[in-house]
Image 1 (cartoon, rainbow, N blue to C red):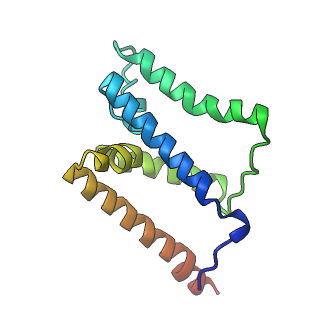
Image 2: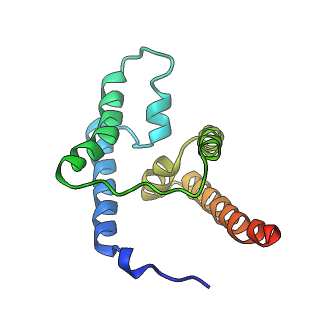
Length: 148
């Protein structure tokens, strides 16, 4: 059975965050002609240097800097994870490999690609969402049941 944590349910903040992500992605495409796919932006920095490094570094600096600016005004939420450091590193590496095989990440395919009605992005988003659902089911239900 699934319970909703109503004390931490934030539909309006989530809607505003999603709208800001969509606006930022639209502005990047409109003014720079680039897709706001994080793996592509980061991967485009290698090999170093290229002619378009300035906007890529500015974008990544904004991703890192925004929470730091927010922390000046409000305390950051406490980070909680049931996974250990090794599991988080392994998961990050697997995500990186997956983005290379999938030619993009959730922001590139899920946010930008679907909004452009790209069939390839729709298929990629469906595939990584399905993989996420299966992974959560296996880890949270099957593995927990077998361990008990």
